[in-house]
Image 1: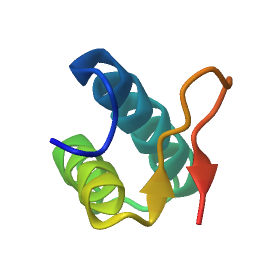
Image 2: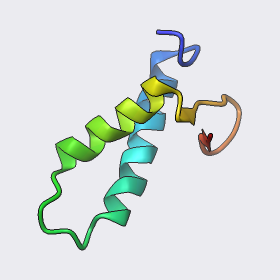
Image 3: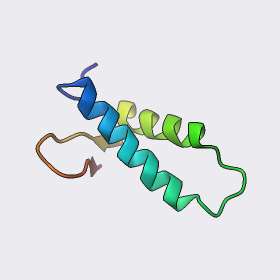
Length: 61
């Protein structure tokens, strides 16, 4: 995996990022939750969002 030390950390980070993206797009009629989750996962896997363990929220690069 190489993104975090645990799968749980990745799941939590994706969920938090997806929630943030969803809040940003809540007025857009055409968004789907699955695309928001996919976007969040893509951001984390590409390194745009870095998972820092021991903090409350993932940091943005």
